[in-house]
Length: 53
Image (cartoon, rainbow, N blue to C red; front, side, top):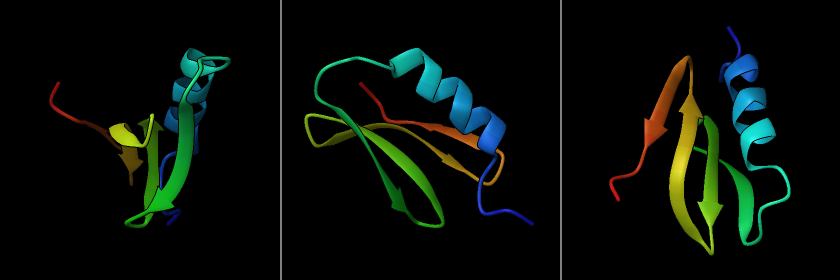
């Protein structure tokens, strides 16, 4: 089993491509996306995780 759904990850990446202050970091067996250092979403297994805003 892969650590996280790469198809879902690629959909996120295509949506945030080119935006300023956005980065990605592998964490918790998945990947988190951050804006100016604050997590706004992530992928764990086949789940999309969204931070409250």
